[in-house]
Length: 435
Image 1 (tube, one colour):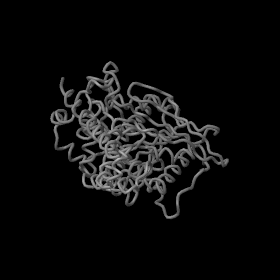
Image 2 (cartoon, rainbow, N blue to C red):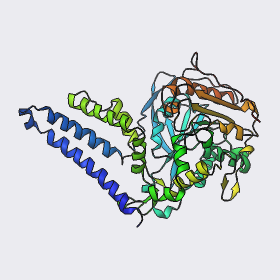
Image 3 (cartoon, rainbow, N blue to C red):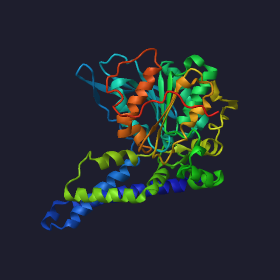
Image 4 (cartoon, one colour):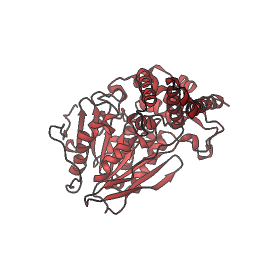
């Protein structure tokens, strides 16, 4: 079957490297080698530990790891992850804080489906939990979904978001990070026309490709160079026999990971070399920066072939969202129908994945919104990751997003955390008309 042998070959290579790492670690760790204290054994053991861990992480879904948060009452409150809506390709989960009353702010984080698990937003969730009730879209790994569950493309993804928003109610504030930004905008427009009373209160779009042509990046250039036929031949494979989704056509996570690493190969190679030397010297630790970053970075998931291909074809090549031509089941979704949902965009000045200009294009599409319900923010010096999980997010962007949510709530909400820092970039209340 097309792609199944190559899929299993990739898994075999991964499994072999994990076994080689475990073997090297075990072999070099025998006490007898202490009689010949040669540094080779320490380096071999360190290489084995790092290699085994790295290749094992590629098939393990990371844990959220958010055990508790500090409350206003001075106590630590336990955090429990509960599933509110469970569907074949994704779930809506809630971070339930024990012993805490419902919060005035309710936030739904739309996690990207772009190769990594929703846990990529762990630090984003942790930063919002003290000030809001937080809900997250937790997408499932396509390799674990039986073929009998059917297809899942960008229209299905959008309808999932519609269902999640309807479940949470109209007082929800939606934040979409990266890849789902255009589809979240479309889902909001769909609700505006079909069920206006179910629309969210605010919509914040962070670093998403609303208009990929607004600013070229390596990602958009690749999408332009490769035809859909070439793309399908290059990256689409069939899930192997090891998983429940055997036979499903996917864009494999391992292939995506190879692509991610190749973009900064020298940086990653240096990071692993430094980690091996640190382990050999006895300076490594279980939860150091390297392990915390790569435990998440290396954990990848498969995407359904139809979702990946329809994203490239319709969002990047066809510009259906950028030109307001997106359809669901043949019915047009008019972004101009959004008239009551306040919309804010956030971009990073140094974002090389979704460059400045791509996300803010959403405001021009919202022709039915008054200027006072639109806002934008460009974070100086921030890259793609930093605008939702780094210091730029924690120190500047997060306070501004909470301020935006409160500005468009029924009344001001007292923040539990710090407000906008002194000297931080302020909310731009309106966008200069370009028409």
